[in-house]
Length: 149
Image 1 (cartoon, rainbow, N blue to C red):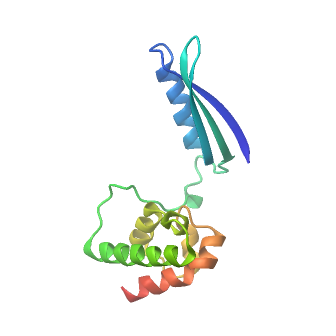
Image 2: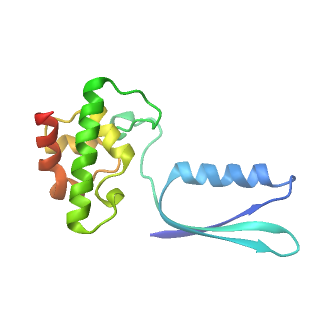
Image 3: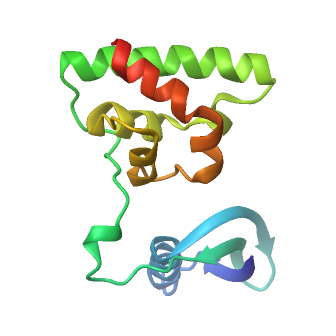
């Protein structure tokens, strides 16, 4: 895990530039955790500490890009049924494991599953946010839900 500290200055002279630097960094890296603090010195600014891993993806390597949908993307009626079933399953699983629901799967991950409809556990690797751990723990149950809806 790497650490990066960025300063987002609030003056009109710097805010656009500093924000674009932060935005570019967020697109190019996998942020694991962050901290921020407002600093009022001679100039006011936000200090942002980012704990991250570099994304190791070539710009033109679209084949290895993970499948992910945008939050505003429309779902058809079958996809809505799948999503509702996945959310119900996630809620029960989180309650049983005493975890927040997003530890099991985020809304965006569930949306991607509902759209992509993987047929095998291995295909869950194509979903952004799903790695070996989630697939080992939840893969079979997710595939069963997809088959039953």
